[in-house]
Length: 320
Ligand SMILES: NC(=O)c1ccc[n+]([C@@H]2O[C@H](COP(=O)([O-])OP(=O)(O)OC[C@H]3O[C@@H](n4cnc5c(N)ncnc54)[C@H](OP(=O)(O)O)[C@@H]3O)[C@@H](O)[C@H]2O)c1
Image (cartoon, rainbow, N blue to C red):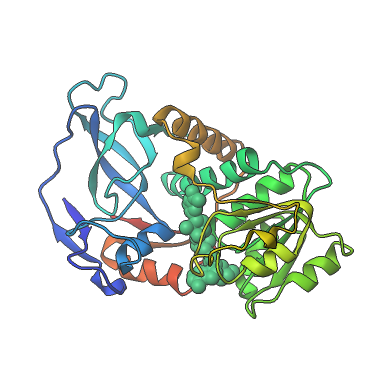
């Protein structure tokens, strides 16, 4: 088998492909042949050194593929089954092992690449729009990075619930992607200013919720966009972590939360249920993942550059 290995953390060029022995599935695990692996922002942090990892390290926390063989104690999964998973699994590889309890069977109507494009991004968007702040008809949502992976799917879920969506994006291509995901208005926030425009679009009232993937660069202006008792959802930090917050900034009524998918779905069963819900929506055509680019494993560096440079308007995938 082949896999991407980091011998050291650093720029995208540290992502190199190496030959390796096929891993043996342990108790409760299966060996899968990977057909598509998703690139996520967390992979970039692990590669760059922003997050600590034990070296040598193979990134990858989601993928799709076919079960090759099962380890001891696995009874409900058979070789040949098409599956997807969203769990740290070193899936930047031709093969990897995954805990059987984290596998989601893939319905026939969903292509492997679409499944991966929807899975982790879709589960995050689903958590945000159902468990963290459930938008209802009449609500207005501000969705940052609305031309990105999670942002685009979040727009679709909010619009589907009858909410009005104001998206932000840093380029015309991403603004177009956000519009295609249903955003009613898209603001270019690349100069860091967007609050005045949001207040103008809401007649001075402010939005009901801000879903923020960016962090430091959008925090203050985002708070300024909220109506009294509005909710600020800080779920990512692609622009850097938010500085320590003076609680006075909540103006006596605002709600601030920093949700994590792992904490909302602490058991394999809960994670699998959410994954199945997301794939169900993809299957019925109500959630449409957007694939920005598909790169061979040997070009994982280019895949990371596409996300890091902010060029990617949707999911970036690796295929063996
Ligand atoms: N809380 C959780 O459990 C959870 C789970 C999964 C993902 N996440 C987070 O969700 C966020 C979105 O992830 P994603 O995979 O969907 O990524 P993505 O949309 O491909 O990228 C994030 C977006 O952030 C924007 N951005 C703003 N400042 C940036 C900067 N300095 N560098 C790069 N991008 C910047 C970019 O949009 P513009 O170019 O339009 O600004 C970019 O498209 C990430 O912060 C990720 O860590 C959180």
